[in-house]
Image (cartoon, rainbow, N blue to C red):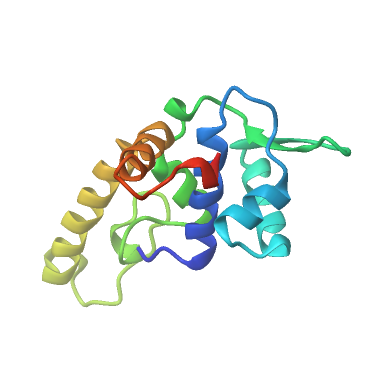
Length: 153
């Protein structure tokens, strides 16, 4: 699994929405400016996240985006799978996006065996890590001297 720029931007936008959860909507211009994400690209990403039911939008002058569910119920795995696809480093070990190996004996393939362990470790971490935990990590990192959090709230 490699997190693309699209995946990174999606997570950064969700951090802003997670830190503002329970408040009104956040305007797309605010997210774009705070996270240095091109507005057009961000619009596409947020539309994609909306189609997945991760965010919701409100139209109009006072419109914007907010999380559809509490950040405690959104796993990083769900977001990354939706944006990037499989979490597995090779498709022959993917549980949701399996494709047969090109090796001569899939059952005895050493590479596949190791990549399955890698996939299992990635899944364990990302399935167990929520947007709320990511937001808390951001708060902790910005609580250090010289790191104001106000630029993302």
